[in-house]
Length: 390
Ligand SMILES: *Cc1c(COP(=O)(O)O)cnc(C)c1O
Image: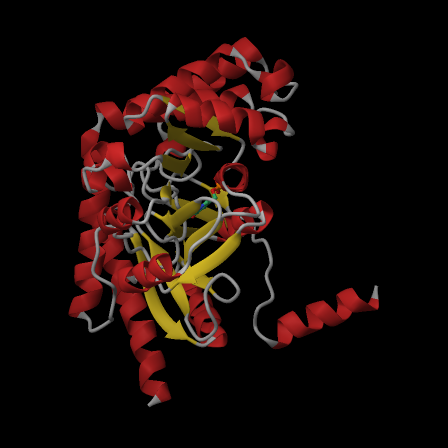
């Protein structure tokens, strides 16, 4: 076991050691730890639906009616009635013929990408795509060509100069998880048409967040009919758990037969499926919740910009504050924690070396008053770091 001791030693030396931290949630925006209350600015619970009474009620009723677990994989015994309802609701939401639920977004990416591409194919993948996309590409054994982040010139060059015997797939995050920017999906779709490629978009951070009704990146650009494969998660803005893929009936039928991460894993628990369905209903009935999320995100961006903290302008609730060195990001996080704020320090391998950052996420459940106070503390701490460096 010495190799594990050596490994952990190395990780610690590089400031990349990771630990799970226990937080006791109070509501969607606050947590308690050791008797102290903190403002949560590190969660992907963008709409606060984990604590929405209607959603919680649906989950509790599902437990009473169907039990706590599903007891089997979807293709054997695990498909109870809620699944069909949820998949229909997801297809409606995404404007597609059909949808298929996976146990996580991670598993959706593994299953979908490895079902669509094989050793004869080429996958064109944005350099900042999520780890689960990267792993899906690896599992497919296709050739993977990585294009510079959102660089459509580079993507086109690769498409133009690389032929293959098989299929071509372009895969991208819709909203990039650590940068909060939006993929130029309209351009990607045009390039895909020109170079005969399939487009796969991963809307983990776009679902319930961008586009009309929070319907995601394709809806944001008004091109739902042109994006063949839309992946998403139920675990972030929808406040439940699970992943999904939406597309044509043909696509869904094939993936249901092919995706090993779908076939060989026990179906999600009834409570989770009911919660996801209630969350979709809530989003459709309460568009003001998404408005509030957008207002809050803009509010924090404006406050930080006014204090000379450079933040990427944008429309998503993910606000990265670039720091650079991993130990600086850790120091800032610790300092802000002392001031009552939970903010994630994002370090390699999640992001490229030298681009460690604070990743601030805003939700619809934050009060503007507490956001203003938090932005002040963040600006002061980041400003102090910059001054010391100079
Ligand atoms: C979080 C995330 C996933 C994984 O989804 P889970 O449901 O958490 O497994 C996939 N892709 C992206 C871009 C993500 O941010």
